[in-house]
Length: 209
Image (tube, rainbow, N blue to C red; front, top):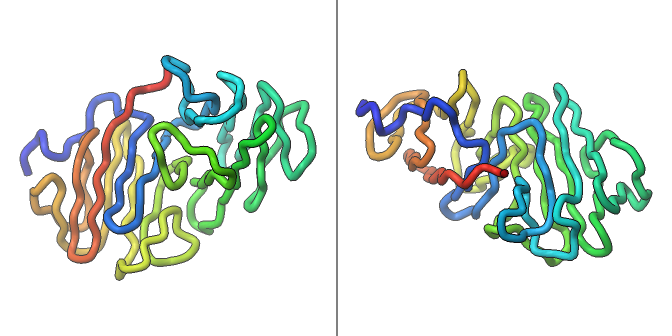
């Protein structure tokens, strides 16, 4: 395989846009500490939202398999105003400010990764279908518990961390940036992955300030 086609950068980006053909676009975040806030120029947040928020509104921090939300401005969990860091559970709805509502999902039994979805009418910048909070793995495929549900796929495809880089595994042959691989491969910061019944593209985004 061509070295430049798949080898990860020495310092892998912590923010990427994941485009899954026929499914949608997702913000993929690999840092354990995620800052949410208003989408303003040079806001320095990991999840910029076009809405009535503080510039730096809340942290979501992953500690092992647990996620904790730390309010920097007005935050409600299940309708209750939070005044201190609070653990999140699968199915929680979190309200930021007066109108931004997010759902928190952590459903895969074999992964500590989680998913945030905007329930309210606002959108992220760039626009995404969901925010993927990646621990060690992010699982794409046909099962309802997967982080990205891809109904037309025959089997799961797993993004996973190894060393400082991001890798992909899927049974059998597939292509990374047009180069044939089998079972698994490292991923460059920007790359396309294509198999018999799946296709997606990873695009690096600027790191938060």
